[in-house]
Image (cartoon, rainbow, N blue to C red):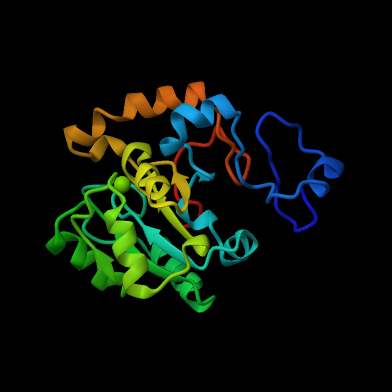
Length: 218
Ligand SMILES: [Mg+2]
């Protein structure tokens, strides 16, 4: 644990109080070897969590993230679910109370994403065409958000993380919720994602890399 009470990790380094206390960067952020970064930078998330509600107001404050572009399918709910579960609504409420602004950013169709947005009372941008960065830029510009304090949070490396990285903002990868419920065109990318994480180990914020994707709170 670091001095802030959260586990601090830096890739390929043992957790060690003296190492962490001398780091300039936030110890929860992943740092990649230069050669990996050079070839794979669009797909390298800055942070990784098992479940989205691990991004508590306290952690986001520590990371200096005040604005969140939030994916919907397999990040907040399983693909085939029409409504958000209580734990998601509670998490969104806790962020709102902490003055963290959120906008849903999905490749899904407007009508379906609009219903989810209505349920959690958040603005949304549908048909975002991730991995293109334009959707991220549109929301950031419309709301006059500070790019340095904005993060894209989502479950797909080749859509959410890529869109965020191409947009020049920070990215958080969330382990997908029930990816087997997704349509085939999304599912075909999952083996590639698994291969990616095998080749490029990415430390999760809570350090539990072997945890299955299950909601943290019921
Ligand atoms: Mg998704």
